[in-house]
Image 1 (cartoon, rainbow, N blue to C red):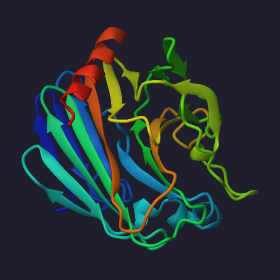
Image 2 (image 1 turned 90 degrees about the vertical axis):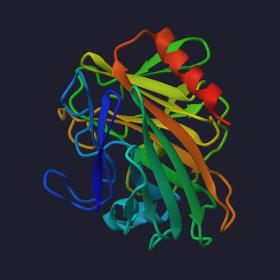
Image 3 (image 1 turned 90 degrees about the horizontal axis):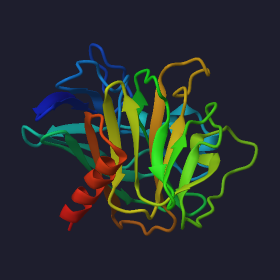
Image 4 (image 1 turned 45 degrees about the vertical axis):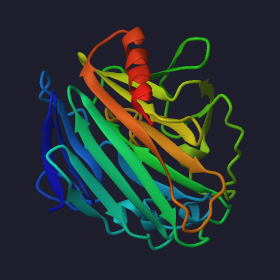
Length: 283
């Protein structure tokens, strides 16, 4: 079993590993489809909440696409835990020797809770940090922007082209990542002058709203592409994020928790209340 359909509350989600099947391309793990009771069109194209890159600023930039997109190509297994929950497990990968577990749980009325854990098995990261990148491919939103708070109010971000000032850091993020010079471009290499204060952002999908929130600011970075890697005319938009571990120990576990709210449109006050309500439940 490489995928399964889950229906809880207003949401129906197909969750699966990297295997291809009818209607789904190989290499895209995570939530393959997500629909709302009042909108039968999937929010995602190929996938959302998709672990796409492991990076250290060197090997993935000098290697081929199997290294650049190592989570797409390395073996991964899918386990259905319950009628509302599933887990993806990726054993230590060939290049970075990073093992990971991603658990998804649907929660009524319109949430997906995600818990990510990882464990480095070797000192395989050239510049001493672990970089992880998730992609969420949105299916032709009329408004490609994401919105987040910067400490003074709400900020709108829509990058002009792929790789153009793509990554937003937290206001207190002072970590400077090293990257090999004269190597391929990447969203995680290109920094925006904007900064976020609270670990959440949202975007619009027709009459619906996608909200992504995190349990921490440490290590979290937002990323955006107006074309999902395609030409500027491409309608697929990427609302992405990263998790940076500046220093790591072999065999030590690292991770974070996130929540997606996919609901009918609401006010900014309601968006922030969603975040505060969820954070209050975390232990």
